[in-house]
Length: 174
Image 1: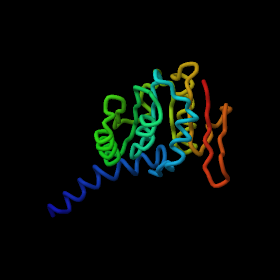
Image 2 (image 1 turned 60 degrees about the vertical axis):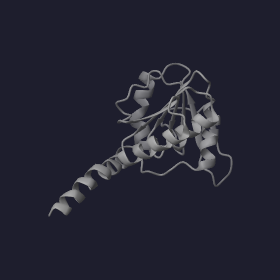
Image 3 (image 1 turned 30 degrees about the vertical axis):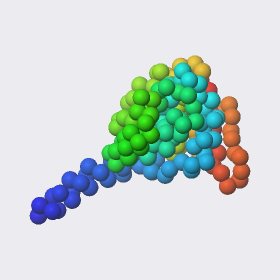
Image 4 (image 1 turned 90 degrees about the vertical axis):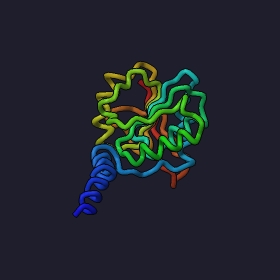
């Protein structure tokens, strides 16, 4: 009986947030390693830019932003405690904890008003839900870099499709 209770608590703590985040935003599908660098390049990150990754997963994009840009403020939002723990460990091991942070928080409720670059690999439903938030919170000149899916109702300033077998990346500027 106690073992079942421990299993239930572990399942609830570790996997229900993962299922929940999959439903409200996207399943935990990592961005391809080569596309991380593409996204960062297309984001045109400057040293003074504040960078957000909505649904940071295992942290590959926020760590890539630290590796391939000079931004001093890189923030990831993630709901899954497993992924947040993985991110925290990776950030600690990278020696970049002064530049990168991961927050276990729902990005729908996060304040993005200081964002200069926002990265997303989210389903169309999530992007549609975020569009009004982007329109009301993002400052003029902010860039939204969306991997694989377009933001309905917005016109991309750039659409990058480097090869037929690669997923597109859409860049939007407010």
